[in-house]
Length: 215
Image (cartoon, rainbow, N blue to C red):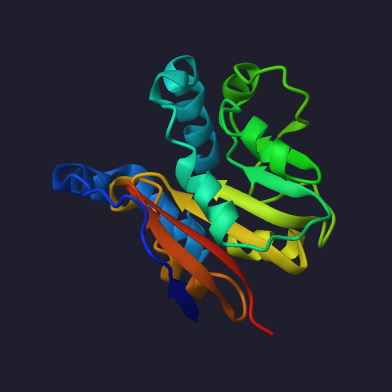
């Protein structure tokens, strides 16, 4: 495991009350179990998570702010260089609020989301979108050069399968420890198969990391 922390950008404190709530949130348990691949993503859990985000789709846009994409842009700018060819994969794309920014930077982009209501709320911006479960992606082995996950569950074996050699994982937690779906960069590297490492930083309340296989 090797994570190099870069200088923070406009670091802001995270509300400890929000951290405490996130630690007790049901999605925190699902997040850690999915990353550990201990069978939590089975039975009714995928359907329940899909239903929860279907219910949130109508108001999800109210959570967006002009600066909410800044940590993702910082990760791409300072965490690179990222592969300049191939397909970038946006997992947990939600209502597509980040897709246009990613599409402007990626050679090509595929946005994947589990919630059909989130997909229905996505803009008609020309980005190819797919409704799929990120634990069993309908993609060939080594099909993508960059995988972008923002506040998204980590399925290590499947992500390792679809990333090409030399591929990169961009991981963003928009409110760091106060994000219910949260892993530290170090936890992500430990969860991925084999040896992984890269760079990480704080940006505002967010934490980001850009990681790849080591050898």
